[in-house]
Length: 54
Image (cartoon, rainbow, N blue to C red; front, side, top):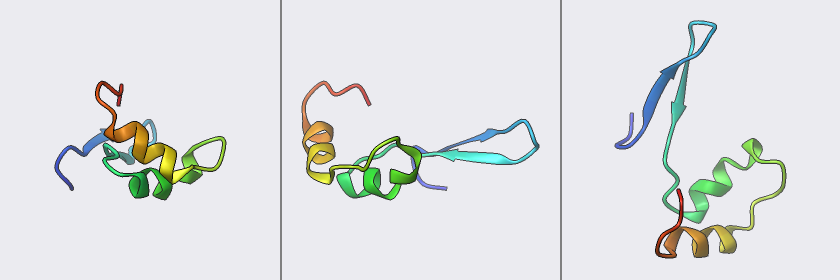
Protein backbone atom coordinates (compact mmCIF):
# COMPACT_ATOMS: atom_id res chain seq x y z
CA UNK A 1 0.00 0.00 0.00
CA UNK A 2 1.27 3.50 -0.84
CA UNK A 3 1.88 6.30 1.64
CA UNK A 4 -1.39 8.09 2.25
CA UNK A 5 -3.51 5.14 1.07
CA UNK A 6 -6.14 3.86 3.48
CA UNK A 7 -7.87 0.49 3.34
CA UNK A 8 -11.52 0.60 4.33
CA UNK A 9 -13.51 -2.62 4.85
CA UNK A 10 -16.61 -2.82 2.69
CA UNK A 11 -19.97 -4.31 3.61
CA UNK A 12 -19.21 -7.52 1.72
CA UNK A 13 -16.02 -8.30 3.63
CA UNK A 14 -13.84 -6.93 0.82
CA UNK A 15 -11.57 -3.95 1.10
CA UNK A 16 -11.47 -0.69 -0.80
CA UNK A 17 -8.26 1.27 -1.29
CA UNK A 18 -8.52 5.05 -1.09
CA UNK A 19 -5.60 7.05 -2.48
CA UNK A 20 -4.89 10.76 -2.55
CA UNK A 21 -4.41 12.01 -6.11
CA UNK A 22 -1.28 14.12 -6.34
CA UNK A 23 -1.03 14.59 -10.13
CA UNK A 24 -3.32 15.08 -13.08
CA UNK A 25 -2.24 11.66 -14.36
CA UNK A 26 -3.42 10.04 -11.12
CA UNK A 27 -6.79 11.78 -11.46
CA UNK A 28 -7.02 10.62 -15.08
CA UNK A 29 -6.25 7.04 -14.01
CA UNK A 30 -9.39 7.18 -11.84
CA UNK A 31 -11.53 8.64 -14.63
CA UNK A 32 -13.89 5.65 -14.51
CA UNK A 33 -15.00 6.87 -11.07
CA UNK A 34 -16.22 10.26 -12.36
CA UNK A 35 -19.36 11.28 -14.23
CA UNK A 36 -17.45 13.08 -17.00
CA UNK A 37 -14.08 12.75 -18.72
CA UNK A 38 -11.09 14.15 -16.84
CA UNK A 39 -9.33 17.20 -18.27
CA UNK A 40 -5.79 16.43 -17.11
CA UNK A 41 -4.63 20.05 -17.52
CA UNK A 42 -7.49 21.28 -15.34
CA UNK A 43 -6.75 18.65 -12.71
CA UNK A 44 -3.04 19.64 -12.67
CA UNK A 45 -3.94 23.31 -12.27
CA UNK A 46 -6.38 22.52 -9.47
CA UNK A 47 -3.96 20.24 -7.59
CA UNK A 48 -1.11 22.75 -7.78
CA UNK A 49 -3.23 25.71 -6.65
CA UNK A 50 -2.83 26.86 -3.07
CA UNK A 51 -5.74 25.96 -0.82
CA UNK A 52 -7.40 23.31 -2.97
CA UNK A 53 -9.81 21.18 -0.93
CA UNK A 54 -8.41 17.75 -1.75
